[in-house]
Length: 266
Image (cartoon, rainbow, N blue to C red; front, side, top):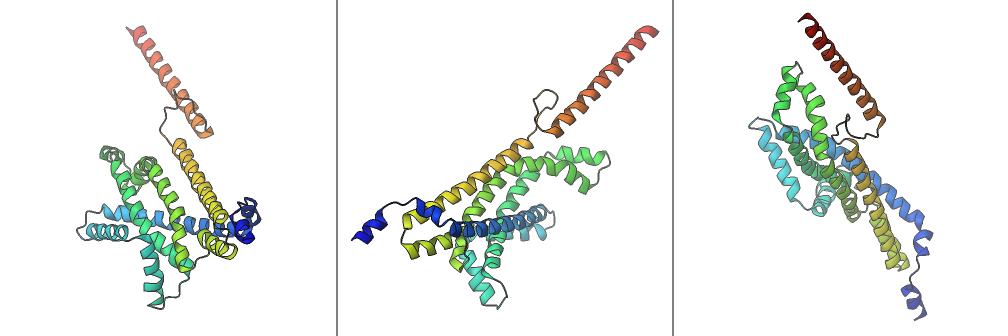
């Protein structure tokens, strides 16, 4: 009875005493999320560009790619990649690699649609204007379309990264020792379920909150502002504002000089 009562007593110091176990799981969770999200972002951009292709072959193939991977539950897909594909076909792939592959493929479908929407949200007139001054299509895409599309897709991309961090916990099912896996092992060994899962919740809350504020900063950093009239904080924006003000003063002075000369000749 005394053992049961001892286990029922809340011990917050238990979380701190086992911080090394939590940190090992956090480190692997962050690595999985970062690697999978980087790969999913690159693949998602390719999917978005191919999805907008006017080819009657490429476009439908990419649409099918998006629809298939968005329709499969992530937990089922993780199991399918590791047990159904890797083991069945004798592929030399670890559980971590299988988890990263599953996350990459599924999130690339979601990110591809986000990127496609952001690119198509840029007015077509800006593309035509850029090409009319001699820019090539790659230059137009890199210098005109992507900066504007990047501002549009930043908030939903941040949401997807938060989702990636949370969904990375699903790879515990194939034995990856990430945060949830090590938490389960610790709870089963010590029977301190409340403290262990409270610590897990706190860690995920810290990670997702940090990502939220990171993307909010990126969103504010690259938002459109009138540098001539608005208060700007970044050194680059202040330098650009100074250049524009000097240019504006030079244009005004030239117009005044031209008006003075015209009046004198008349």
